[in-house]
Length: 296
Image (cartoon, rainbow, N blue to C red; front, top):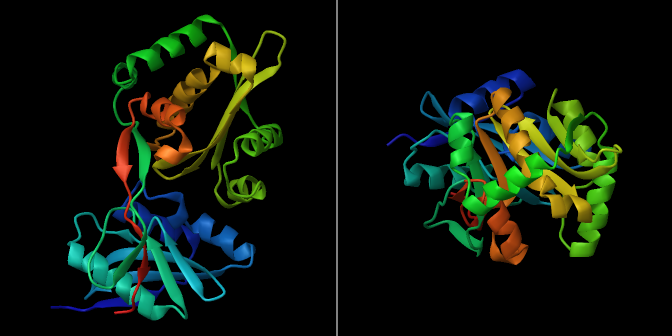
C-alpha cells in the first residue's frame, strides 16, 4: 500500500484556490488562502501542505499555529469519498510534520487509533442553494415562510450596503447583551481585502431610511458563510431577518454560490436560533469531533 506523503505548498493564491475548488468547491472558509493570510498577518504560524498518495494529490491542508499548538479547522480538504483509513492517515501524517501539537476538527467525522476526541461532533446548518428559486421557497418551513410573506407585505426597503462598520458595531452590542463570541471586528475588513467581492452586506430600512436590521455573509468560491446579523425591536416585529436571509440567499445564488453555511445549531446556542436557521430548509451537517491528532 502506498504511503501518504506531504509536499509543502509555496505557490500563489489562485493555484491554491483552484486546488481547493477541484477537491471540494464548497470547502469551509478556514481552508481558503485568504483566511491563512489573515492569520499570518495577525502573528500566527501558517503552513500549507499538499497531501499526496503516490503521484495523486488527495488533499490540501492549511494549518494555523501559535506557541506550538497547530489547528486544522474544518479541514484538511480531502478528495470526495476518500477511504476513512486514508483520512485518518492524512491527519496523522500532518501531525508528524508540525513542530508541536495538532488539533483538528475535520469537516466530516473521522475516528480511530491516533485520534483522541476532545470535543464531541457539532452540527452546522447548510442551506443548499442549487435548487431553483421556487423550489427553495417551497422548501421553507411553513411558519418561516409566513413570516417572510408578512415582511414582504410590510414594504420594507432592502439595500445592499458597501459600508459595514454600522452593522459590526450593532452586532457587537447585541453580542455583549447575549453573551456569545465571534471573530474579531477587523476580520471583515481583512477578508474584504484578501478576497475580492468576499463580503456581502444587506440591510432593511423603514420609510424614513432608518436601518432596522442587517446581515453579512463572507463569500469564497461556491461557499458563503453567514457571518453576523443584527435586528432591532421593530425589525424583529416585522420579520426583517426572514426577508434579509431570503434575499441574501438569492443574491449569493446569482453569484454562483451553491452552499450557504448558516453556522452552528447546537443546543447551547438557543433553540430559537436553531429553529430559525432550520426554518429556511437548511439541512444538518455533522462535523467531525475536535480531536488531538497523534503523529503517525
